[in-house]
Image 1 (cartoon, rainbow, N blue to C red):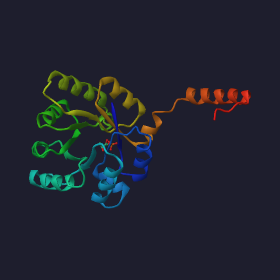
Image 2 (image 1 turned 45 degrees about the horizontal axis):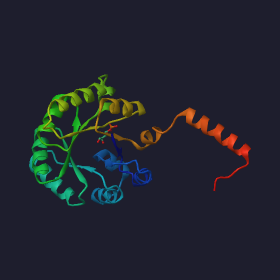
Image 3 (image 1 turned 180 degrees about the horizontal axis):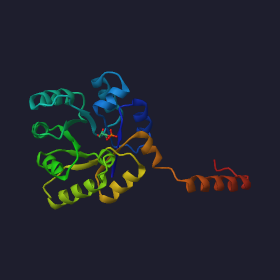
Image 4 (image 1 turned 180 degrees about the vertical axis):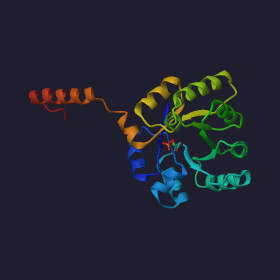
Length: 218
Ligand code: E4P
């Protein structure tokens, strides 16, 4: 499973990139607004830090507008991935941009049929939003399971499932068990994946016992 971080915060991205565990970045208009600063400059800076796919979302909702914005954003760097919404115009823009060799992430996916259409439109990634389905009492992880099964039924689909709107470490584990190709995870949740109280306790004990030996390694 690949890990993307779901943020536009450059400091968080730099810190996580330094771990060597980061495969890409996703942003959306809300995350760009939260980080502040110029959109295109922020995307350029993120692309310079992370060589993997960096999602930048269009603001237009019509085909021509999405295509124009997508082409403009794609000029920033080779790893820019254009995010388009899961609408008919978005799917049409997805098909056009992918045929030009641009990476495309079809976002705001809330049903298996939507994901089927994204694959047919040639999307590089489809982003099913787990947390937002859970928020309204539905089962976000069931959607990941359905999409996995549908995509596995058709060998000609090359779209990666990018599990999004992840809220907990358990979401990451469940998505990995199902076989989502990528999880885009908020920085705090990504850092929380490493934590286990028995790791802390065990390390504390080992260090205490090691100190008793009076030895050094280097
Ligand atoms: C995905 O690309 C989105 O940016 C993100 O995962 C949305 O998450 P949220 O539902 O927590 O806003």
